[in-house]
Amino acid sequence: MTFGLANDQSVWGAVHRQITRPLGWLLLSAGFLAWALYGSYLYIASAIDPLEKLATSAIGLGIIFLFGTVIHERRKEWLTDPYRSVYR
Image 1 (cartoon, rainbow, N blue to C red):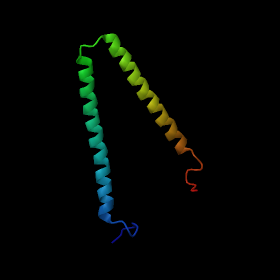
Image 2 (image 1 turned 45 degrees about the horizontal axis):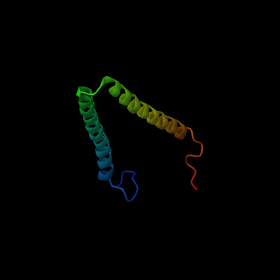
Image 3 (image 1 turned 90 degrees about the vertical axis):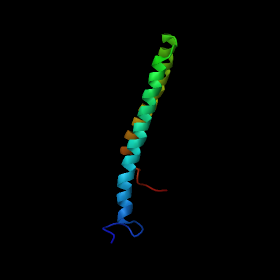
Image 4 (image 1 turned 45 degrees about the vertical axis):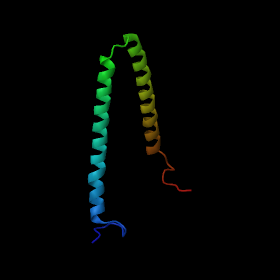
């Protein structure tokens, strides 16, 4: 039985992809969030000068914001690209 799938795909392959991909992203996100929260706690609780904490936080947040803007612009451009489906 194919249920409208291509010859090289099975029903269980489709079910497997629909279960494991979201679960993988969920576990990756949860692990990264726990790691980031623990690292932030250690950073805040350390005995470093507040001015140094402020400076390093500004650099880190600046890099994150720049990276986020580039991703947003690339995605927006990709959605409106008229040559997206043209193959060379």
